[in-house]
Length: 394
Ligand SMILES: *Cc1c(COP(=O)(O)O)cnc(C)c1O
Image (tube, rainbow, N blue to C red; front, side):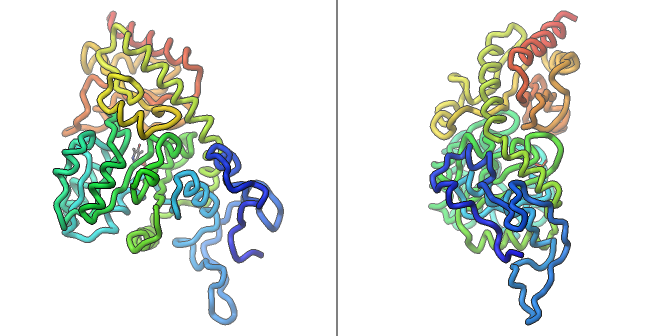
């Protein structure tokens, strides 16, 4: 039996491009059986050595699971980080970043961001003692103005951000954070560990709702953090996961690794289709506005063009002429697109976003959020066109 996790075979080469790293999940081979796919480790506990040591490095399943190793190492390699850590959900990963701070600390977060996390910051985190300033994170001056010297410990960004796809300048925000003695964490779920590498732009932590693009098949809930360096903050994050028990199941970790092997072809296909749909929908008579970072007229396009490579992601939103009723009616008529929340799966989803965000949401009521999957883009356009056109003829 091995003491250490297996390492990539030497002939895999040190300079592999990211698609190769993802396709073979670092090329690890299970040393006992020579299997090219890892086993699922379900053990809740590990044998202690006779001299009372734990030389395997593993003690108990809430802290250590061998099924996490290959996923975490692959994700760290894709993001250019030092270490990665899986969580039970994207929310568990995101909230850990705030729980690793102290009550009384101040954080800066986007006014428009993933709704459940904003809700948690306004509720639980605020009651727990964090001070939160929400800013227009598409405006670097607003981020700078939100920082309180000596008090701000974390700037949180999401880019592109739900559901309006605001783009934040990661490099500039990292400079602001570091000048103030704070860290920068980026929810990079929509950039999918493919289009943007926040750590290379100066961010300290990258967060993923692995539920979405990393897994890509809408069949598990998972989250992940990747760190630029192993420092005391990362050690606190490790403790938060272990103490709150926000760990992923072994089977989910295995499924996630399987999903990540096709990450590049899935998300580059989806981004190409999203761009094509956005380009066509801007001219659609029933569409008021298309929100997509890949459109030249979009507010954050210049920043996106600088910090996104290989595409602008698979998420866009459209504002439907005729307001809320027309938007909901259009969503009711799709056949190929599926009416559901979530994003990043192989099947395309449409959602009337304001309905799920509820009272206080900054989401316009005429907005439909589109998660583009890997179907034929012409089929996707035709289905949407028919749904939009018939909705407005009623
Ligand atoms: C889904 C999502 C989350 C939360 O992830 P869960 O796995 O659902 O907890 C966080 N941020 C973004 C951008 C998301 O899309």
